[in-house]
Amino acid sequence: MRKIVVGITVVGKDKEGIVASFTNFVFSMGGNIEKVNQNVIKGLFGMYLEVSFSKNINIKNFDSEIQKLAKKESMDVSIHHETDSEKNIAVFVTKEPLCLEMILSKQKLLKGKISVIVGTENTLSSIAKKANIPFVHVNEKNQDAAEQKIIEICKKFNIDLIALARYMRILTPNFVWRFPNRIINIHPSLLPAFPGAVAYAQAFERGTKIVGVTAHYVTENLDQGPIILQDSFKVDPEDTLEVIKKKGQNLEAETLFKSVKMHLDNKLEVRWRKVHIKK
Image (tube, rainbow, N blue to C red; front, side):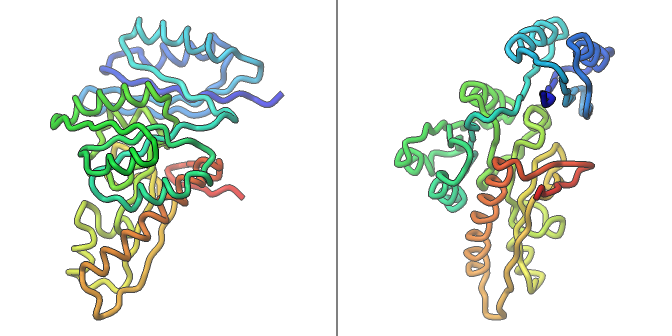
């Protein structure tokens, strides 16, 4: 029988003994720890455990037992178990429509379902309505409050993968740590060349001859997550900033879709902060 792999995320206020508490729990359930990543930022503790079981295990029972431990330790814990069932995808948006439109137009090619669209504004709600997909407007200015609402949305729709389709808010570690290597962002430059939101303007001002885009997994470090795909186009001398933006936005949409599809096709594996593409 093939081994069963379960991902466990633990997020909460940092305190002594948390790592031992959860690793001992895994051992007591007959599991083996394959990977462990942990971090502490400003008193917030985050840990990801990837554990395997060589014998059959009841996932619902495992989740129930670990939630008891989570309550005891005052931690927010979730588990993620890869199955052959259809994956639930959340798309986060702000104003720009192209990435969202690309994903929706080709969603039949994805091994997953676009379950919800989350917007910082209502700008793209009509696109969601036309596609008959729930649209949730999260307009809280306070990022902690906004993310708490988004966390509840992701739980409600049982989200497996998040695609940031030109989502113009920076996600904090409190959110990112809950979806390790399951949030894909598209950035309008060949990282790390031009980080930040005005990458095209920087490229234009510097007279760049090649402009590109980068799809990457999101980590707590802005624009520094493992790179999935990159693509580029040549800049003609007569190209204006608007022309460069238009070319770039089309490429963003294509590259983000390709990355989402590869993830859902189980073609991607992250090892030592690098993405390896399986053949």
